[in-house]
Image (cartoon, rainbow, N blue to C red):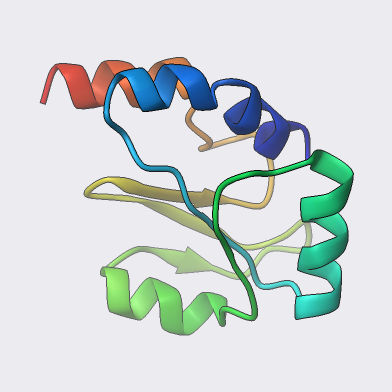
Length: 99
């Protein structure tokens, strides 16, 4: 959840750069609501995604792993269940500004 918190803290910077923030999760509605409340998120959170189907639709790479599943960045979206492969808020803003 620390990375989600980072995105929330950086929401003002995203807003200033005209970047919309959404989150997507494989969590159930109940677990997604718990995260939203715990992290005090103000951006939309989609829930119940199927990692393999999401990878297929986005054209991303999916690989089962004992520590989680990783979907590599495609276009302007990124997913990771661990810190490897995640973009920080600063990274996202820089990518958009230099695109």
